[in-house]
Image 1 (cartoon, rainbow, N blue to C red):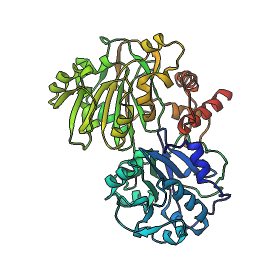
Image 2 (cartoon, helix red, strand yellow):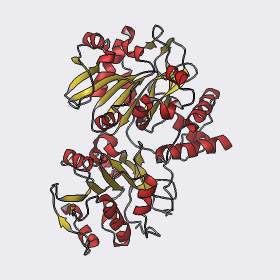
Image 3 (tube, rainbow, N blue to C red):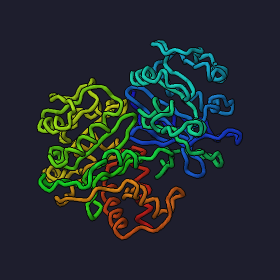
Image 4 (spheres, one colour):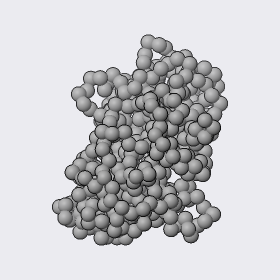
Length: 471
C-alpha cells in the first residue's frame, strides 16, 4: 500500500524521542534523489544518516552504518521500521547472519524472526548489511513485489580500500538501494546533534561524493567541438535540478538544450526538441549518448516508432537498433519522445534497474494549448523526467551552433549556484557571476511554480529557493 512520506515518517518516528549514536563508529552521509526517498535522521550539519523510500510495491529503510542495526538504544525505531516495512501481517522477518544480533532486538510475541541468507516468499522483511551485492537482483524484485528491506552500512571505508572505483556505481549496497533513490556515499557523517523532528526533515541541497560526474560529461561529449541544432525545430529550455543530473549543452545565456542524469543503476539523456535527436550533424553525439546509456547492458536498442528517423542515424554509427511500437523490458536503451506519459512508471523502473533512456521533446507548444496548467508539474514528459532531476520548461531557446562544454570547467547547475548564494558548507567559495545569478533567478521562479505535492525532494528544493529569494 502506498503511503505518503509524511505519514510514513510519523509511523517510523512513533515513540522515538532521541537518538543515541556512539562516537566510536563513523557513519557515511546518504544521498537522496527522486520522488520517493525521504530523510528520517538528519544530523546538526544537515547530513542524512537514516532514510526511507518506496520502490514498486515495497519499502526500504537505509541506515548509514550497520552498527545501528545492533544498537539496543535504537530498539523503538528498529521495531517501528520493521513494522512499517512488513506489509504482510504475520510474515517472517529474515535476518542475514552478518547482523544476527538484530534478532534479539526484534524478538517479541508479535514478530516472527529467523536468521537466513536466502530470500523466499515467506519473508515480509529482510535485514542485512550493505557489503554484499550477490543477491541484489533478487532483493530488488523482492522489494518491487511488496517486500521490505532494512539495510545498514557505510561506504567511506570501502572506498578507501578500492583503487579508482566509483562509490555511487560500485559500492555493493548501492546496487540495491539506488533503485529507490538512496545512495551510500564516501563522505563521513557527523554524529553530533542528531535531530528528532515531528515532520520530514529537509533534504540537503548538496552532498559531496567521490564519483566525478564530469567523467560522464566528458564521455558524452568526446570528440565533439560544437553542437549545431540550427536546422531543428524550436527547442524548449531544460531545467537541470537533480543532484545526479548535469548539462551537456548551454547557450550563451546558460539556457540548457541538452542534459543527462544518472538515476538508480541507469542513465538518461534528454534533448529539448525531438528534432535534435534526428539531426545528422549530431550523429557523433548520438553515438556517444547511446554507448553511454547502454553501459554494460547487452539488450537491444529500441526506437519508438514515433522517432523512427533516428534508426538510420544509429546505423551510421554501426549501432544495431530496432523500431518498436512501445517500451519493453528486454531493451538496454529506449528512445522516445516526451509527449506521452502512459509509460512513465515502467520507464522509471527500467532506468532505476540499469536501463538507458534517450528522450526528446519540447513543452512550449503544449503550454500554449494548456494556459491554465504548469509545465513543470503537468506536462506529460515531465511526469517521466522530474524524478530523474530533469524537466522541460515552456520557455524557448534560439536555434544556433554552440561550442561544446568543457567538462573540467565548472558548468552552471542550479544546486551549485544556490549553494554558493546560501553559503552552504559544500560550496566551493566565490561569488556568482552576473550570468549565473540571472539564470538562478529564472530557475527559482520556474521551480517555485511547481506543485510539490508533499514530495520531499521538491519541497526541500523549494525551501532553499525561498531562502534565496529573501537574501
